[in-house]
Image 1: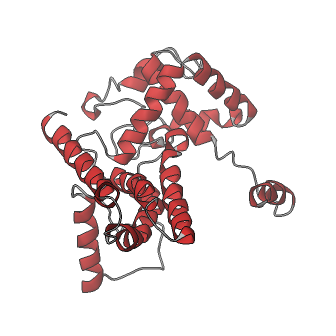
Image 2: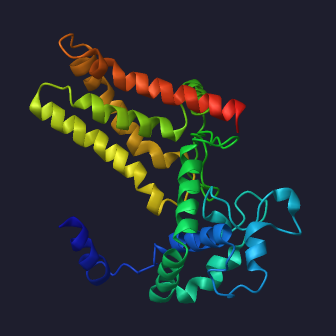
Length: 280
């Protein structure tokens, strides 16, 4: 009821303007499909050289990329890392937002499904910081918007300690977002060993939510920021003491159920570290 209610109330009751929030996703996907297929999914809208520009900036080869990067959609809206941007893509497509751009997007996915899936997998891998090198996204708790003129905060020793821990944890083998997805998946297995019915169902539902939330980014993800893993992280952290007290500490359960999920977590982290450090 909540979602249909908003679909009615937002435009007709609250008079919320429709800014077509799906448009950045469509722009990102079209750029990704163009990159991996080698065919201009914008049908020449940005000129005959767009496929090449989307792959490499000829005038800025040191940037190592073109308009497209699996990291995020931002390069189609502005120049987020000062390595080159294609802000004209988002700006010039605004008249097409809505039905027309949606049709172009759907047609591109249907005509180039392999390129679409490759693009989506590349973005999810980059967001999860899984099989990639140099893709860390340090957690800077002190970052603030540059338009804050009146609201400021002076760091104190406690804040500095939290900042130090946040940054170093995010850079450790346990910091990448994929770890929390992995923990939630492992806890799905472990939660089946909880004896109490209500606790078992609530725990299973919680870690299922954390798992599905992150997996949904395979379809709708467009950004790289660490904050997008917070819900999955919270689900894992909330479920952890329940799993330990209701599963790991129970001697009447099979050892595989008690320790198998944690062995799975450790094995994947170890294999990933080996792959990133020695193979990639």
